[in-house]
Length: 255
Image (cartoon, rainbow, N blue to C red; front, side, top):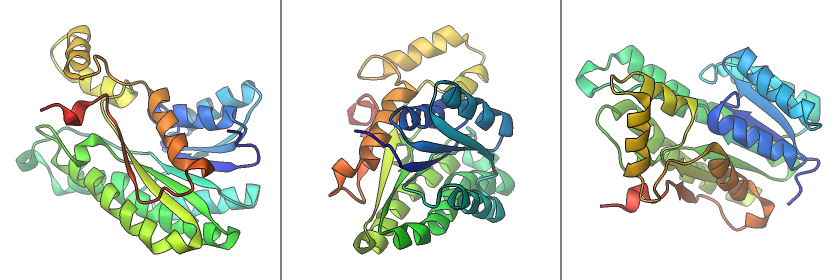
């Protein structure tokens, strides 16, 4: 479908899944606001989009900062007058066992991954209500339902996103605001690459293990998750809200 005239805000838009989402929406005709903590990354993606003849602007923000979230939503509304789709994708993913996890690190993961979703949803929903509707897509993870050693904070944050998505969807269903959540599995992103680099085993061997551990035979690509996010956001999906969409190559069905 065409997204002409629609305004999309994407957090964590400077790389990985967020970059793919930003590019896909822009190529379909939307005006995209690329939000990233690192300004250079957001600007790079926005430049890629505009150089291809599409519409995008970059905004640097700490997604765990209430002031920054208000600024991003406020500046977007000043620029475009509305926000049709909010994609909450930003996340951090340290791998630390519970007893080695400091309170500061725990709070960092929770605020960046979960509190950020609360802040952006709380800030964007009033404008969507005023406009007569809108869509929010929150990006969680399969770690919300099945996890690995060392991911207590990350899995807690991602599980919280799933539960919060359902609650927000219920709160605003009658205001024509749909809220859905996407659970990606292993996807070839800078986050996955960083986890591989931190290990002593050669990258090629680790990536082969990642690929072989997926029932589908390989890890996912950012564009594949972007397609699911666009599906969740699409007006063609007008009867879907509070839904959890798993895109994991079959990982969580493999006993």
